[in-house]
Amino acid sequence: MSGHSKFANIKHKKEKNDAAKGKIFTVIGREIAVAVKEGGADPANNSRLRDVIAKAKANNMPNDTIERGIKKAAGDANSVNYESITYEGYGPNGIAIIVDALTDNKNRTASNVRNAFTKGGGNVGTTGCVSFMFDKKGQIIIDKEECEMDADDLMMMALDAGAEDFSEEEDSFEITTAPEDFSQVRETLEKEGLSMASAEVTMIPQTWVSLSDEQDIKMMNRILDLLDEDDDVQEVYHNWEE
Image 1: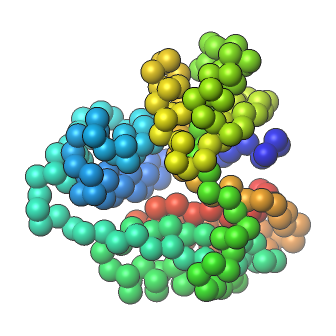
Image 2: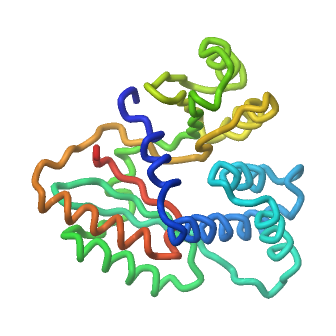
Image 3: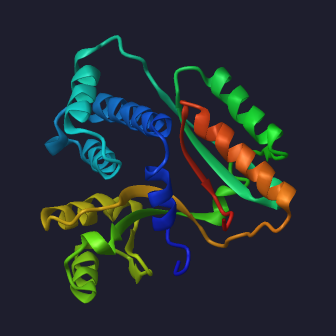
């Protein structure tokens, strides 16, 4: 993973405009609603909700917004039921793309996702066509500037808590876990007061693909921009080495 830290990407995302921040809050709000419906409104008894709250805090979502989202999901029996759906496909030059969505209208979402791929010169494939090229992992990114702990001490703490790997990048520490160990590792670090730039279960590419053709780069960005604008889209994973 060395050399492919998501941290620069995370900083870039966080520095985006207010509209983008609104989109992130919409995405996390839906995740909160699904987590509450699945496991209840008490984070102490709902590990998925705890993970979503940690993600919300890493994205600077205010505590009162988080609490409102939990109360709304818990108190509204008629609230929207979101369905989880994943699309897989290809961008320019065979770039692998996975799109996770939460939707109350599968037809609308499928149409929008297909449209994004088509406009960027890509195409939606069948289930499983690219996911085998990714590993599902828990990933925690810690900004070096926000971390007072010695790197070796942090590594030992993470590994003792159940992490699979620890790597040091130029400006960050990256901890990876098996998906089932993610919550335990994250909570161990949280109890030590460590601030996390990102904490989520994600899809990490096994190999990366670079694009040299300007038109390919433009088209790939077109796909990503269109997907980013769609409120149904929760996460987009790809193996483009930007």
